[in-house]
Image (cartoon, rainbow, N blue to C red):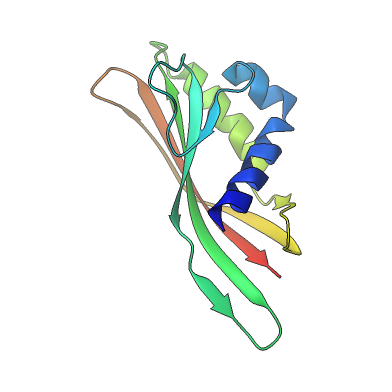
Length: 131
């Protein structure tokens, strides 16, 4: 199941010229970035995907976390990428195979400096997919 969800997220990001320009073409990854990935980059991970069924439909009510990493001294780079991510995913409807739609709602966003002196911006979304 996560494979088609990851494909939908990847395709949605890949369709954003602005976000790809800020990240440097295709520096966005499901789960973990490769070890020597150039900064800045974006990765996402699924926190929870509970499955619900009604008499007429199936519903996935998923939590997804995006992580943006930047080694720029200023927070401006990571914040600019986060703003583009918000524009792309806030209240978005995303196409996903075998589902009628997937709706996105931002739950939280925060920024910290990690022990390796990189800015880490984390944004969590709730995604609702129905079929």
